[in-house]
Image 1: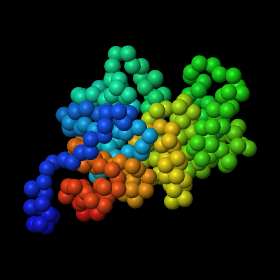
Image 2: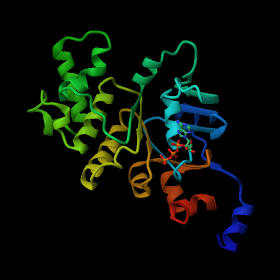
Image 3: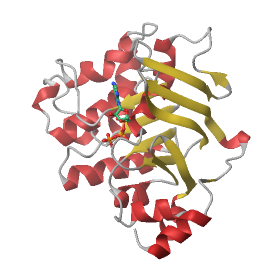
Amino acid sequence: MSETLLSRAAGETRSAIIEIPAAQGCLEIDDLSLRYGEQPALRGLSLRVPRHSVTAFIGPSGCGKSTLLRVLNRLHDLNDEVTQSGRVLLEGEDIHGPGVAVAQLRRRVGMVFQTPNPFPMSIYENVAFGLRLQAPLKKRRRDEIIEWALVSAALWDEVKDRLHDSAWTLSGGQQQRLVIARTLAVQPEVLLLDEPASALDPISSLKIEELIRNLKSRLSVILVTHNMQQAARVSDYTAFLEGGELVEYAATDDLFTNPRLTRTEDYITGRMS
Ligand SMILES: Nc1ncnc2c1ncn2[C@@H]1O[C@H](COP(=O)(O)OP(=O)(O)OP(=O)(O)O)[C@@H](O)[C@H]1O
C-alpha cells in the first residue's frame, strides 16, 4: 500500500453504514457474530436490508458472504461446529425464535446456490415440488402457479412445450432459471442468491441479471457476487464485507462512484482481491 493510502486509512473510521429506516426494512441483522470452531467468520454485523430492492454483498474470498447468507436461511442449524450470537429479524420476528419452524422460514426466505441443482424429475415436477409440500391444490391452480413461476423466472417460453421432460435436459443457464422458478413458486418474501450466475456463460448470466431486476417488484433480493459490474448493474444497495466485518454499506451508485473508505475503494478498484 502506498504511503498516501496508508495515511488515509489510518485517519478514517472503521465503517460507513447507511441507516435504512426501520419501516423500509424486511430483514434486520443485529450484532451478528459467528464462529466455526474457534475461527471467527462474522464479527458483530448490523444492517437492515430494504424491502423490494436488490442488495449485493461483496468482498474478498473468505470474508463471510456465504456464511452470512446461510445464517439468513438457518443453514448452520445442524452444524455443531458453529457458534452464533446476535439476532436476525424477518419482518420484526426473530428467525431463531421458538415459534419459528425452519421449513416455514425457508419458504419465506428462499435460497439459490452457485451451481444449479434441479431435482432428478421433470421440469414441471421441479417447480411443483415445494407446492406439493403445502396444502393440497387443485391441478388447475397448481398449473397456474407453475406457469407464473416459470414466466417470472424468464423460462416459460423455452420450456412450455416440454414441461414433462427431465430437468437435466436443460442447459446450465436454463437449469439455474428453473431452480429460481422452483424457489419462486412458494412465493418467498426474500430471495437469497449465492453467486447465481458465476457458473454460467455471459448470455445466461445477463438473463439472470435481468430476471433479478424484474423480481424486486415482488420480493427482496440479496445477491452475493464477486463480479463488481454485476453488483453495479443489478443492485440498489451494496454491502462490502472484509474479514467478517461490515466495512461499508451504501446505495450502490454511491458506493461504486464515491466509496467513503479506502478499504472499499481498494477492493472495488481491484487493488485488493
Ligand atoms: N463449514 C465451514 N467450516 C469451517 N469453516 C468454514 C466453513 N465455511 C466457511 N468457513 C470459513 O469461514 C470463512 C468465511 O467463509 P465464507 O464461505 O462465508 O466466505 P465467502 O466470502 O463467501 O468466500 P467466497 O467468496 O470464496 O465464496 C472462511 O475463512 C472459510 O474458510
